[in-house]
Image (cartoon, rainbow, N blue to C red; front, side, top):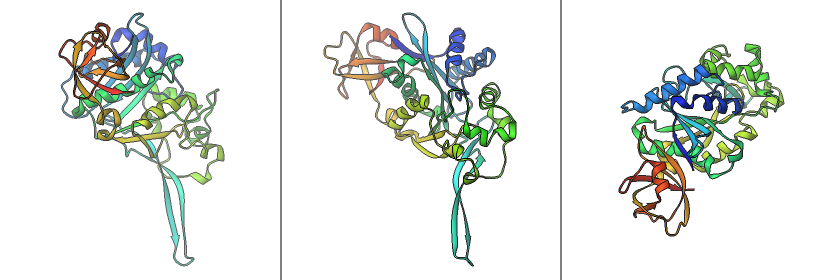
Length: 338
């Protein structure tokens, strides 16, 4: 059985394997043992703390095979983006100019460096083994974070964002980076992303131009990358789009990938998830497939389960499900249909 749980320090070797396999552009998962160790320790501290409002906490989850103990994926929540340092992004909006004398008004799309999204809860670090792509376990890895937010609402902001990895070629070539960022850093795209993962995007963003970049002045290949999703990032986009996330006017600083945004209370897995009491036994007639979680903090667990569930009624879980979720007879669980 695959179980989502909080990361622990002993996961470090396997987490570094996931980092090596992850898509270029997932800067929150650097292939560096010291940086990953720090992320794990920060996450452990976040789960242990008593929190009444969103702050610098990060909650890191791993997807584990309960039999082999092999990690098959990971994902993360940052409670408040930009809490410790500005969360830089590019705002893509029209600049309007007009001439009364000529009776001409014209709008030109332009990219402006900003940190408008500071204070939003950020979903990041999504990575899953290739053989599990487009399965229920991708849904579990992404959406169980939302069930966690539903269970611990005071820890998170009123709005949630995520950056989807933008387009780059198989050899790590990004037309957007080549047209914009490379002029200010003289670094290949892959190296810039690596440095961002090891350090922060802050020191790179500070070297970016503080004035608007007019989109029509960029090469067509770079313009075509604005808001374009890397093929391997499409599933992450699709899952959250079904949850009610929408694209907005912000794109990634390095590859031009889109940013998704949603009001927290309107997210499907938060708004429509149900609380049910556990009955132990064998499900008689499993009529649906569900994401199921407990509402714990440090002992948070989530699984995919075939269940017979009716709203407002107890739900029967077998012994393996109860063990995976760390629940007993009479415990409360949270669930939503796949």
